[in-house]
Structures are given as structure tokens and as C-alpha cells.
Length: 453
DNA sequence: TGAAATGTTGGGGCG
DNA sequence: ACGCCCCAACATTTC
Image 1 (cartoon, rainbow, N blue to C red):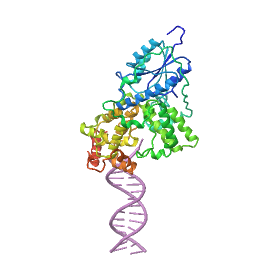
Image 2: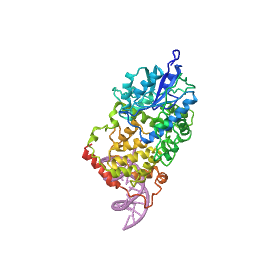
Image 3: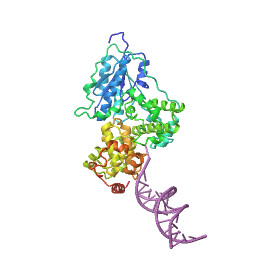
Image 4: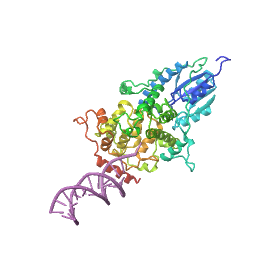
């Protein structure tokens, strides 16, 4: 770096792979200084290794972000390694005097960022891009963190009468010299031998894809959402979850767009309220995980330690492969395998089946979802599994056991969803149920008595 | 963001 | 006309 050159600011992208509503980027750009966009693939101890489906997504999303940055006269620098060390090296190499990033809230990442903040030899600024309300901003009347969704969301909503989101910058000032970047292809995030991602082509990772998905949803999909959201046979949900996880779109942008749709009469109150409540569950999950980081791997309700979970490799395998003999469960698990996604209603049924019908520890299911979901998220995945298992704070009670057949009749009344994913249904090739529903239900209820929960 | 078991009610068939 | 029974349909309780 020459003597008269302005020192750049590093914008460290993490799960905020967007240019609009990105406070870390906006602040760096508005300083007028050169900006070095940086992404670090950090899979060191303490940070959970990204699952296979998410790697597929990340690969595309990084490519999209890099392309967008190039249209603004910039680049995306890619580095692998321990985040603190990589940042130190890039700071030293570029003479950067500042590092900006947007905060994350899951255990492992929180500790890493905290430690890294102390060591870094540049000014650092962190921002909120991921949440409407940060976990520490919300507390109950008695000054504690929330453990029940309804009062949490009621309180959170009242704080949100004014939500802002900055537009994408028009241009980024390039540094005098760019640091070296690794090649994205060398990270081998895309699956090979075999490439199982053929069914993933319904997705368009990246900020543009996320915006298109939101616009399409608010234009058509949200109409009737309150009813249609439970129907896996209809195109009734937003499918924004992977975009949200990677931060290709932020909750503030969704909030503003949804409220605007109501204000202009393009969407009904009841539908948008339901939709935003789903955003509320995401907020709530982050809130709970931040305040109780151990629930990523431990039962939130201690009594569940006594649960007599079964080790049943064959049954678990049948579940993962969609061979349980229960069409709705199998359809869901096959949809997941093929597309990296499963409809929310079906997730509840499939998860409930693993935990209650098969009596297999929710953590085994959580790990499978972590690997196979494109929207796998530390907060949502852990909290939702605990919700289904009944071990969470504001969870579904254990005795609430879905009847997979009844759920199919109710939410896939014509069988269209099930037939799409289980084409051999009705033939001799479709397996017999691996457990009898009534017997499995009785066993699950007994198990709780045994565990005295 | 259940399902099954159990309880209650009320209309209609029938002696 | 009346009581009795049956049994949906709905409501409540229990897991």
C-alpha cells in the first residue's frame, strides 16, 4: 500500500450474503473508504460443520454475491481457515484499519466472534442484519428472557412500528490492491461422486433469487396463506427459509414488504399476520438459543434425560430413506432428500414419527436434517426438534402424537403430495408400516410414564 | 401447530 | 302419544 492511499475497510460476509439491508456493508460504503468484501470458510473447532445440502446452497450463493459485487466494481475475496488468523493476515496485507460484520447468534460462532474481537488489530464494528429484534433487547416484565412464544411475539411486535432497510449501495470503492482470493471451485462445495443435487433446481440461491421469491409470494402465494400454509399439496408457503438462513434476504425487508402489501390492499391482514408469525418463530428461536446455548444439543427440559430412547439403526434408516410404510412421512423424507426441503406441516409429522412412533432421540433427527436441509439453521433446527419432541420450553406436549394417516387425510386430501413423492404407493413395492400406529402410540405414552415426565 | 376415549344430546325408528 | 333404543354429531376429558 502506498503512503497516500486511503486504508480500506474489510466487510466480512458470513450469513448475510446480500447487498441491500446490510448494515455492515452500508456503514463501510458510506465511510467513503475502499471496501474489501471477504468471505471466510471457517470450519474450525467450535463452529459446526455446514451440512451437505447447505454446502450446495452456499456454493451458489457465494457465486451470486461475487457476481453482484463485480457489477459494482468490486470483488468477493474468498479465504479458508481459522477466521481470526485469516482476518489478521488480510488486515496486515491490505493495511485495512477496520473490519465490519453482521452479528450471528448461535453457540460456537458467538464465542469465536467474541474471542476474535479482542485479538483483532483493526477497529471492528458489528451490526444487526439477521433479526428484527436482537435477543438481549427483549425481556419479560420480571427482567428475564422469554420462554413462551405468544407473549414474546406480542411484545416484539409492539416494538416494530418503524422498521428500516437500507438499499444496496450503487458502487463500492476498490482498494489500490486486491488481496489474493481462493477459487470457489476449489472448495468443492458442490457434491460430486455422486452429484445428488439434480432435484435442487427449483432453487435460485442468491439475493436476486430471494427477492424474486418474496415478490412472487406476496403477489400470489400469500393469498389464503392462513389456510393454505398447512397444505403440502399446494404451493402455499413462501420457501424463503434458505434465503433467510444465508442472509440473502433479511427479516426487515420481509417485514416491510409484507406490511406494504397490507397497506396497499394487496394482501389480507389475516394472511400476513400468519406469515409474519412464522418470522416471529424464527426470532423466538434465535432468542431462546442465544439465552440457552446448550439447547443446541441438550434437552431444554431436564426431565427428558430419563427418556428411554431406542437405538434402532434399521428403523432410523427406513425413516431417512422414506421407507416407513406411512405415506406422508415417506413423501416428506423423500422430498427432503430430493430437494433439500420439506414442507413445514410434513416436517412436524415426520419429526413426530421419529421421536414418538420410533422412540428415537430427537438429536438423531436433528443431525439428519442438518445435513439434508438447505435451510438448516442452528436456532430453528434445534428449537423446532425440541418443540416436536416436547423437550423444549414452549413445546408441544409429549402426548400430542400425530396420526400420520389422519394428518395425510386432513392436509393432503387428494393424495397429490404423497403420490408425487411415493409413486409406487398402492403397489407391492411399497413397504408395510414398520410400526403399528396404535401400538407405537401406546408405547410412546408408556415411555413417558417410565421416564416420569 | 392432536388424537382417542368418554360423555352428552337430540332426532328418528319402532313397538 | 309415548317411551325406549340407536347412534350420529358434537362436546369434554384424557393421554
